[in-house]
Image (tube, rainbow, N blue to C red; front, side, top):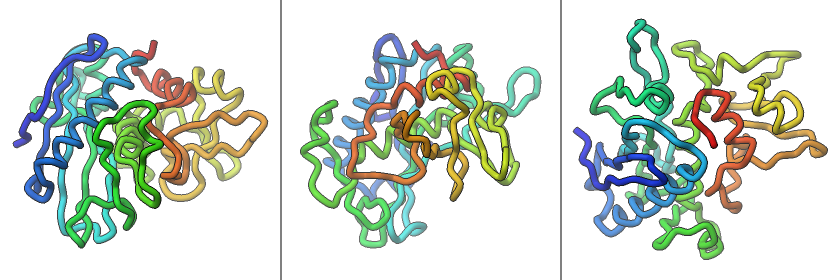
Length: 252
């Protein structure tokens, strides 16, 4: 069962932050830093997104599965609604206030502990900013990855910018994705208006990343095809928020 470590309100949005899994693999001091970074991210997103109900955020710690270390999103948080439809539970709750998945997390990410027992991302040390702000990224040590940036990216995935290529589930993001000429494009009207065209998606790996090829229409995004961890991803862009609005989030 998840252990709630923090709860509160940001811009009227109610939230909890909990941990589960192999939580003893992380020290108490590091946990304090993780929660500070999580609260910072929730606060930044809450400046642009309003939700009903209480959004339950989580960190699930996993050991022994990824020697290089990895921090992926919880992108599979689904539940049945009153009509018996299998839907993205967090998107539904933010619009209705109804919690379909009970004690399960609504949004979150995993920390796959590296083989050396440390928090790493693709073999690189992960920096847990002790006092995260919109400007403190510049203090990040060289050759390290920024926890706040990684988690912001992964939470936006968890919010529904996720694509199942195997067909096990669907969501609004996938429904608004079209295939043409061997490429996938996101076709939501707000994203198209922001970008100026249908938004090209990644050609390698998962289809829930954006590949901006047209520099004449370039809109920076934190949901890019490759993780550029030397650049701050702490704030979603107008294009990211446009996509979230298209898939059902109350973006202001």
